[in-house]
Image (cartoon, rainbow, N blue to C red; front, side, top):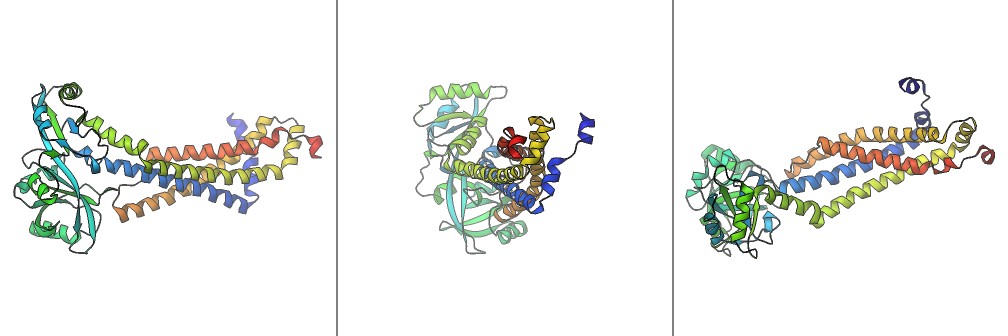
Length: 389
């Protein structure tokens, strides 16, 4: 096989390189399809991952949340007494209430409004698996104090510098005087520009419409050695399904990720965008290969008359498909990487090329080119030297 490949005449490459302009047009079509697929899949992945970024940094083995909630930004509320009821279930070590909501903060440095996710927690409870927050949660014991995500979207350099230099920054949020007493690093999301952590009392002062008896979710910690799934089933058996959903932390994260990946309109939009790029690229490659086959139909018919099989002729066209897939893929990876870098810098979103995404796009690219090549060779099967000449 290696010897056959070594001495085989590269007809596919010679036919493509004989028309440089046609080759450039085909490569441009493949690049366009690849970059569009990279962008659509990359942004969709970033949307999904940032939607569960906060949940992945929460402590707790089990989560009690609203029966209708599917995203943290609009998770709904659950009665606070459900936390007390969960504490009575065997295997439960602790239950901590968390309040969440959105607030608008006018950046005093730029005058621009930012939408921040605000979380109200018990300063004495370990809620976040982030060492920076754990080391500073005692600062939330005082009312109207907060810890800010330094990687929030926007120009927060002045506030970050003030907190790092003086240890505090006085400001106004939602009409209340607030002191930013600490910083941590997490990052922005699509739905929010950043995260602000406050005490439960400060949160209720910010969001005047919320009642202390209606919490966003409850983090339940099981006793050492207890099975979280089994404890979750016992809790679910004691709580009414109408207002409380009981999930392990892994299930809680999976529910949010699944909603955005499969059930939300935005995932459909991004998926359709990737498919449009695939179809457009396939159409361009088909036109190029089909034109090449028609142009050399007489030569293909002559090869059949000389005894070459139809499979051999197909291999020539598939060789062209593979060449187009590879030559169009390499520059598209470079362009996509540059675009991802620009988007990440401009939006503070964790969007980047990953190995699995690169393999997926290459597989789609090769499949697109191979399918186009297969369609382009339909006329070869009926090619007859007697008809051609």
